[in-house]
Every structure is written in structure tokens, then in C-alpha cells.
Length: 211
Length: 211
Image 1 (cartoon, rainbow over the protein chains, first blue to last red):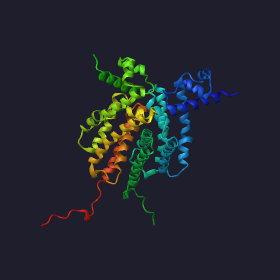
Image 2 (image 1 turned 45 degrees about the horizontal axis):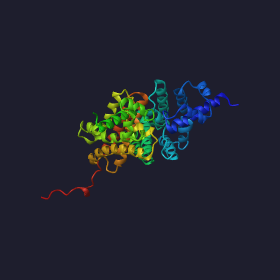
Image 3 (image 1 turned 120 degrees about the vertical axis):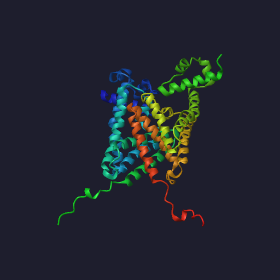
Image 4 (image 1 turned 135 degrees about the horizontal axis):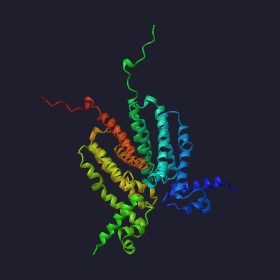
């Protein structure tokens, strides 16, 4: 006999798949039930409403960020700047595998769901955690990134580039707009890194060892 | 008596408003009819389907790009680089006026509508024309933009920043993420402009006037 938790899990995973592939508004609870092979009573035992199911899906994405996005990217390289671009590579791979039909599920929901505060907060939490992952890389890069640059803003900018690039890739059903936007971000990073740490003045330098 | 063209126009404007505010999938044709005060017979006289109405809405956005987006931005300044940021300012104004509930209607559709080729092409046409408007500014900036930089990619990057910034502003119901992403783009442009035109070698210089 199936445990309650596995039924709940299957509902979440089925809803996650359907919201991702066809959108939240286009997905009916009946479709979720049929695909998950669960009856309505079980659904309403776990979730009061479709929105309640959406909250659980968004919580699942919060859980998945490290194992499904950040860890696979960070395993590819130890260089903190390359890790930023490896994260973008995870989305490129996902676009590529789906013929540019699917991009970032959170981005879709952010634009589609004009929902109550509790849902928006969960979408914002996903974005915040994503940016925190990038921010960790930027902090690890130390003064290779100009110290006077706003690193929080730069981490959000990386998210901006991912989402804007994914959107154009989906519209054109082509990886090229995504690749070109990432190449521009790379050019920006190259210019930032070339600016490098500020020259130290003599006053900042440690005194020579005595003797 | 109302002319056919005004009925058709009202259907398009009503659908445009509803698709923009609540999404394509969440909008039913019945709602369009009720709000436009048009009967179903008239709707089907002009449009075979909801998708057909969407195509007309997307054509309307193609027509509106210059008068509603580019012209108001370009009127603010003659400087081609400032014009790029004035276009972004049009979207900021729109976010601001709607409490960050509405952003770019084409971006919403690009992520929501997984439609037939003919619809996607019309979405891509809107993006292409938008980028062409930015590209005109970059070309007008001449060699203030490094000549070896891919200007097509840079114009798409500006769209990327607008769309990614709008998305985060909507998720957070705050202009701040939009402003921070635009500030990063500004920093990138500042670094590009500081790189400036390449130093001419003596060989490139025009000979001094004789005498």
C-alpha cells in the first residue's frame, strides 16, 4: 500500500511537471489527478486548493536548487567565476535538451502568476536563493571582482541575463540569443576582471621585513 | 451604427488588455466578449479562434512599438546611448504606474504561450523590432562603442536586461531589482565607452595639410 507521503510527492511532482511544460493557468487539477493517478479526495487531503499545490511545488524548487542546479555546476570547476558561467550552462543544457521549449520554471511562474503575497514570496525566495548561490561565487573571487562593485546587484544581474536569455531563446526556438547574451555577460566580466584589484598605494603596503 | 473596423479594434484592444493583465491562458473568449460588449457572432466573423485573436494582438504590438515605446524614449534625449536607457525608462515607468504588477506584455506571452510557429514568429518579430530600435542607437553612437563589439548581440543584451529586470521587479513587487540590473548595464556601458575608439596609429592619421 502506498504511503501518504508518496502520494503527496507524486502530486507535487506531477503538478511541477505540468506547470513547467504548459503553465499554471493552463493546468487543471483534473489533469493533475489523472496523470498522478490519484483521486480528488487524496488531493484535497493534502492540498486545500490549486494555489496550495503551487506553494508545495515552489517549496520543492527551493529544495532542488542545490542538488539540481548549483551542485552540478560547481562540480565542473573550482574557479569561482567559471562557476557562475557553469550555472548558466545548466540552463543552456536544459534549453538544448527540450528544443528551447522549456527554460526556467520559476521565471515562467513569476510572469504568469499574479498571485497572493504568499505565492509571490515563495517565487521571490527561489530568486533570492539563486542569487545567493551566485553571490557566494563572487565573494569567493575576492578582489578579482572590483571591490567597489555592488556584488548583490551583480548576482541579480546574472539572474537577469539568464532569464532574459532564456526568454529570447524560447521565443526564437534557438540557443543563439541565449548564447549571445551570455557572451555579452562574459565580455562584461572580462572587463571587470581586467580592472582587477585596485593598485595599492605605498601607505597600504606592509613595511619591509626588518633587518 | 458601429463600423466593422471599430468592433474589430475593440475586440483586439480588450483582448490585449486582458492578456496583459491576467495572461493568455487565464483569459476566456467569453470574458473578452463581455468586456468588449460584442456578441460571439461578431467575434467569429473577425477571428477564427482565440489564437487568431492573439495574432491580431501581437500585430497591434508591432504597430505600437514606435509610438508607444521608442518615440517617447527618443524624444527625451538626442544622445544615442542615453536613448537606450530612456527605452528602459519607459518600462520602469510602466512598472511604477502598475505597482510592479505589469511589465512587458510580449515577455509574458513568450514564456506563457507554447504555441504554433505562426504565433512564436510574431512574438519573435516583436523582439526583433525592439532590438532593431536599440541597434539604431548603438549604430548612431559610432565608435563610442568599441568597433569590434557585436552590436547585434549588445542590442539583444539590452532586451535581456529589460526582461530579466522586469521579471524580478514583478516577483519582488519592487522597482529595486529592475533599477539594480539597469545600473549594472550602465556600468557595463560606461566600461565599453571608456574603452572608446581604438587609438589610431600614425599610419592611419591623415597627412598634415600641405604648406
